Image 1 (cartoon, rainbow, N blue to C red):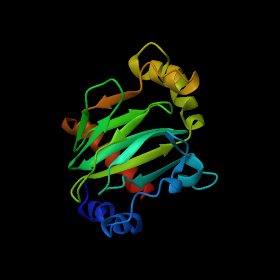
Image 2: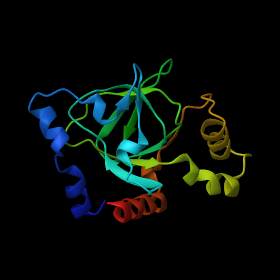
Image 3: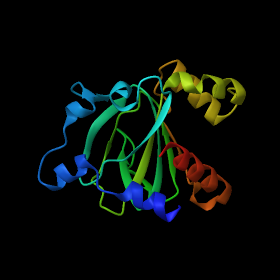
Image 4: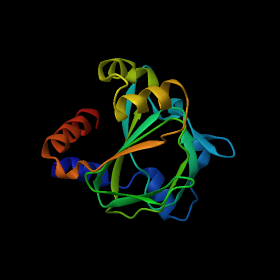
Length: 179
């Protein structure tokens, strides 16, 4: 990752500083409900179909789901994701996690070196991708079943992309374009 972009993504946000000062995570900043549903409208600028937001560090993120598609790219360090009924999923630097709108998960507390970026994607943004990909493969089925039909049979797709320089270059370009 470009050093200046990594520095920008690693900067402590106002929310993270409040957490470091002892304040709890403000769930209302993200959404509502007993099982928190994170609202894309609260995180995505109006009229945008996709945006990027650094993952909140220094606090465990409670069980939640999204009303949008989330793609988490680990820039450095690691995160541990907890999906009900499944073993913990550890994302390392370079990994990519694409989650269904309906996937419930929690995230363990991250440190300063654990830098991830969340791509917040409105489901309609993926319509054209799903048509181009088709439904005869894992990604196409994931898009069709989990995003379009609302089934949670496959809550996420995990890609160990850190070993693929082409994918890393593409992800870095995407981060640079949205930062």
